[in-house]
Image (cartoon, rainbow, N blue to C red):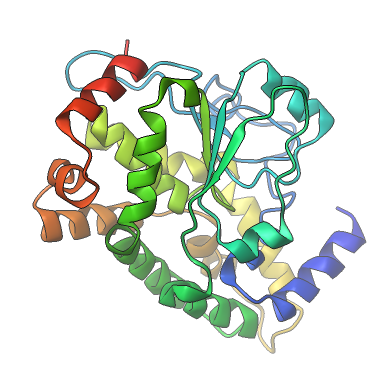
Length: 301
């Protein structure tokens, strides 16, 4: 790994203004090496050079025996580092829309500049940034370097409890875009492609009738794609250079990966406030029965 990468990473750790910008830096070059296991080389995970958590959510079975169509909805981390080879590969997927959940600060430091003849529309549905308390707290924790895994986990649990209640407008807009056939195929993404994107994808799969255990499995797949053990070891070594005591890689896992408790906190919050995810879709996001029927007709086979 290039020395310049680590110099840039260390500088960002101390100068970062938002948690999203730091996570953007940490997401660089932490993917699995070439000996990637079969799980990550499957049809679901699309290997790109400049995006490291790009996945197709097709193939999942619904409660009524149908399945989500392949090649219609993709989830990803940031797209600012896509290479010419990546754009060539993606051109075959005919992507029409990109839904970007990053904050303005994240976009400023990692701009998406889609290249090629068939440029998709990019919709900015900002979640986080300095207006979100959980985002500011995370930035403070990471900027100081004085944190434990429990500290980070508590912040992320707060994030998963807060986002469904404070960002109904953004997720409502997401569904508005999805019901338009001309917007498909679509890529939904944020910086790491695991939290704001993970919640969005969980909502989509719920609306399509995919069972909860499958939604959770898709959510947790991020840990396999990025090789959480390796990523935590690399980043812990860099943080440790500026600490009196070495940072345990276990303390980085709640930051770099996802945990079952995160998605459970999201489901619990929705059920406490709305009674069920179906009621949240209807009453919180104003997704009508007609719109759900349109989604199912477009996205299920």
